[in-house]
Figure 1 (tube, rainbow, N blue to C red):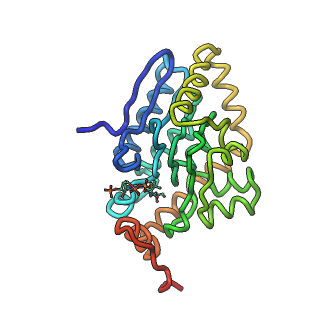
Figure 2 (figure 1 turned 135 degrees about the vertical axis):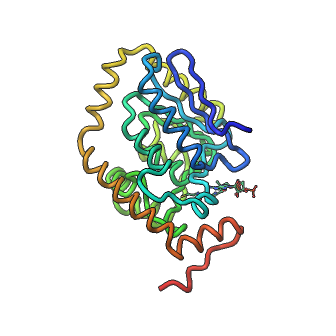
Length: 257
Ligand code: COA
């Protein structure tokens, strides 16, 4: 069976590569569990100084697997997707993301919890939660209006407008935009390897200090969004939108009041 998450350890770096390109690296329940397990292991293993997350040189991730959303939606905050969110939110060690191609839904919101983010010029980021009858998740309803102002955040979160690697960099979501996927992976790896040369507990303490302001508020918002997102997955609006994606048609919201 194909491994949908490749985990490698080398020179103080734990590399996590999403490997489900035929589905644009859509994240299944099993992949969330594997990601959560790997992140917990990264914190537990003294030899790991940083984590590098990528989806390879072509695509980051198309977000949650839509078939999973329909057939096995998360039923509680104990579901695999929330294990993953918690593991990333609580990760003590630095994590660097390399984003090439599409980064949809949680593919974009998870970047708000990474320490360094490198994007390719062709990257296309998008949070189509409302278009899918859903609502923002993983703290995005708090973080993005603060980072971008309400008006810009509304374009991204309410209208689900896509944005480029260059825009992500201009807006402070990413550190730098690179010419292509290979250059993005190389830059992210180079920066992640720098942590191997630094004093590990100084890095850890500093990351914690940077995260501390507003942390409890953010934790509460993530829980609240998670509850609402789970409820919304069971609404007729979301069922219509998710079924429409699977059937390659436009959703019809005209019957909803
Ligand atoms: N869940 C399940 N399957 C997905 C998927 C997802 N999130 N994203 C893509 N796929 C599947 C497609 O159904 C298609 O499968 P098929 O070859 O068996 O028909 C395959 O991956 C390739 O996707 P396709 O849409 O043909 O590729 P594209 O290059 O035209 O578009 C995306 C790429 C990522 C822009 C587009 O697939 C997309 O918008 N995906 C859905 C994203 C989404 O809504 N995610 C949930 C966010 S909450």
